[in-house]
Image (cartoon, rainbow, N blue to C red; front, side, top):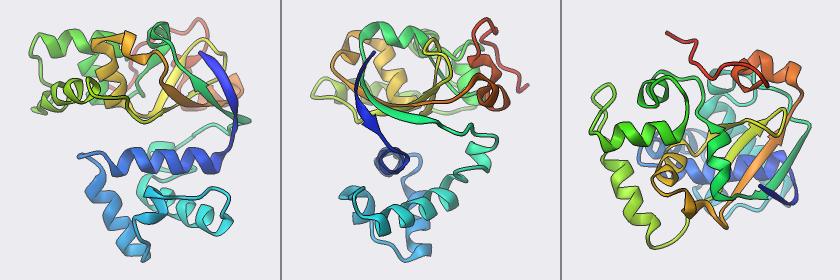
Length: 212
């Protein structure tokens, strides 16, 4: 993992929403939030982080859509001290983990590792009746290009937790070499803050689901 430059919360939010609006799973819900607020999709698709008015609007979208910064997906979310835009390598996937969520726990045999999830997908194991076809389709898409950056957080530069991009990182798990030359947004926080959100990301802690 190579740091390219510093970045900001505003850019992270914009990229998070870009990833979700392209997702077959979340696009409809995000579109409903945009309609509720009276905002056009252009504020995401062609967003400008140098426009503070836009940044405020996108923060409102994130709050209604995902509970950012302190509810739902982001309950107990750590205060991020700094954000970086980084270049990934194939080895990085070994240290990248899913959030502690039932679907991803089951798919990864309770390891939260995309590499382990790929084994189950190859074996035809489906979780909660959810089709694995989107992963297979994603492999074909990856043959023709690269995915948008994923969003990760860490407190120790050893373990990285996926905040946005679970499906994309799973697809990379089929061929980690495809990660070479791709990018991510990485937020850094203190171990004390991470412990309240996901203690599995602390050094020495076992990577094991606690939500059963």
